[in-house]
Image 1: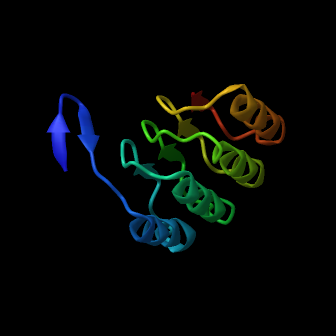
Image 2: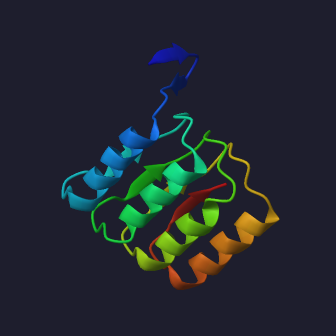
Length: 118
């Protein structure tokens, strides 16, 4: 992708998101996944969230700068099911009070998240 300052912009369509989700599901060595600024749709975030529910290796996921909003509910549900993820970056999205409430509820049952950026 092209670089503008420190921001790398790479567009991922829904098919690419599905491939990334499958990697998250089956890969046992990937520990950090940076999907910042990929123009991921809410549907894409839901697909990623579903794969997080079965992943026991990913410790850092960056979904910042993707204009996510309604999809946060699915990510929060994944947090409730995943006990390995340590860092979740959701900075520079369109998360409102409702999304923050979903995240707060998920964090009540998830003891593994050390750093959450919203």
